[in-house]
Amino acid sequence: MISNQTIEMTQKVVQKDGHIVSDMGGEKVMLSIENGKYYNLGSMGGIIWDMIQEPMHVEHLINKLMEEYDVERSVCEGHVVSFLEHMAKEGLILRIETGDVR
Image (cartoon, rainbow, N blue to C red):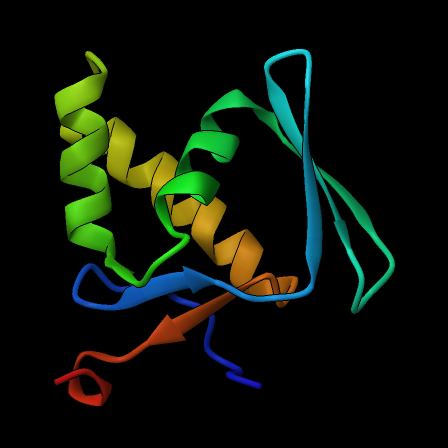
């Protein structure tokens, strides 16, 4: 387990296996089989969750969201990093250091 949960722009993140995810009225909800907790990812969290089915650089994730939505970079970055840090703390995503990839 990684003790430092700070998400860096140069890291890749990916969904961790072992979750049941469903759409509920436009929002994603998830049950973690590992910890037995339910999570409401919301609509934007659900979009981020879908985007990290395969490993993706955090910077690229933010850029793609900015292309899709009218949002300032600082606001988008803050929300994405906060969401990913929470997901990492709960053990729902894996963080891949840049040196670990290719």
